[in-house]
Length: 489
Ligand code: NAD
Image 1 (spheres, protein in one colour):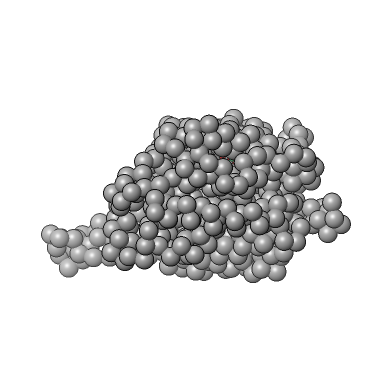
Image 2 (tube, protein in one colour):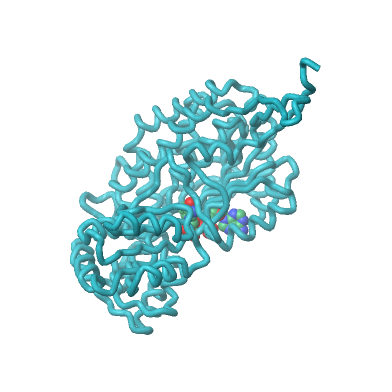
């Protein structure tokens, strides 16, 4: 490991953050964080138990009243301060993500920009929480509608976007006046610890945000979710885990936000600008080594352009440079672990066994780290697992369609509904697809949609609620209605 990497890692907190103090797990246990490009242990950090989770929630509950009463401008300025600190430390934040998660440094820098924007956006939204006042229809009273923070929150984040998934939840919670316990994925906890240290430096009062890192995920989380003092659960992760958590949250009637899995269609019509579609496809598929909920999972291409589209993509994919994300020029890093490599491998084998053509790639890469070749599969046959399951790896899978109705039917043939991508130069067709795609988001002639100013989220089994945009803060607010008699009566 390079000296600069070791120096950075030595400066990242390794303890739990509870009530404004960095503390060891009460059991003294630690968990190892691994660089997926080398298999090397890069840090050992506190591994919380159920009692640590309870203490974190105690701290969040204790801080709730005063944080809710803190002026919105002050809450916003803490977020803005953290945004500014992150800009000063952006290279460190990017390198840290590359080390613990594997994405190429250029993409990690992109995530710092994207993830940081939630701090800035919600620093601005904190002072725009509004209500309304008016006469009731009968004319006998005045109706007041106001917004209040929902109360203590539990935030659970995945490993694939370690910074952005944390800021997308923490920033609106802080802006709304909610306190939090955040639990990052045990695979990539360091970025959240780094971020929370910046929030602390920006003046966040003790107890407003508490961090627990743990391998005892289920017992620690279940105990927090069952605590009647908790008022909100926000989860980003896989649909099966989200379903379990929704069931647990139901027992406590928690307000919930669920950002779950995806199976995004990427539809290319015969009237598309193929150059633009190829560029969009490369971004929508290979960003984050394919490990994004928004990753295009099924390329549904008009039969007249499918061969040309596949050929051009395979040519480009063959030029990718695979390696440790810290190395200059690397475009494809490792998958998160060997389990992910095995899963991607089995999806590719199943597709090939059922008749797909391998245009390039197709195999795990032997040696240190969890690498899989960037892959393009053409003629993927109906019934293949790869069309049903989230691939979460660098595999681009192409099927064909005959007409618009066939394209729409194929695109919507999934229980997921996070995002869809459509490439066409026909404006009316594009507008029709806006209405007919069953997704929460859509990219029309673009392969990336995420933006802090936009409402991110899905329909069907891709989740509930929206993060970002003006909608994002409402996930952390409750509406209160007040009636008073007509003051002139
Ligand atoms: P995961 O569901 O395995 O884990 C997500 C988080 O939940 C982690 O912190 C994990 O420790 C925790 N967790 C796991 N089991 C739990 C349990 N029983 N109780 C409480 N917490 C539990 O998902 P992952 O592998 O970390 O992330 C990949 C998944 O996340 C993919 O399905 C991807 O599509 C989805 N994702 C969705 C979005 C979105 O915004 N919709 C964004 C990123 C990732």
